[in-house]
Image (tube, rainbow, N blue to C red):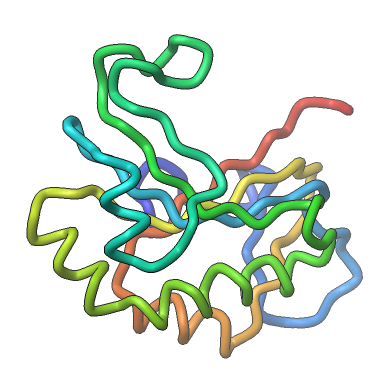
Amino acid sequence: MCERFKPSKESGVVMSAEPNTSHPWVLTDVSLIIKKVDLDPEAVSQRLGITATGVYRPEQGPQGRNRGREGIWRLQCDERTTRDFSEQLNTVLSATEEKQVEIRELIMEGHEIHLSVYGFAGTGSVLPFSARDLDRISRLNLPLELSPNTNAR
């Protein structure tokens, strides 16, 4: 799990592998993110055999915020594909699992790679990870970054 965020009752966000009556995060998206200072997005796409859903060259960056930093290659599954978090997660995990060898090679070449989950989360909301989901994530041995947006919608 990413060191930047640790779910807890104090943060108002809970990861759960158990069924419960709490409400889930909404408008989620799940992504595989690859970063590197001199990233060549086309080379990553070709190597993985996957077309990225979003790319930023180091000199571009989203809205200029990334200018001069690393480039970003993203495989994202969000509400435009499905609103179901489990389906989003399965889509990204399946693609990632199929390319584990290539992903390890990219890491060895200095790419930073992680899984990312973003969504709107209210107090007591949960991410409905199944035990199988957590096992799949663990087997990938990639950091998992959870980014809850706790702003009122």
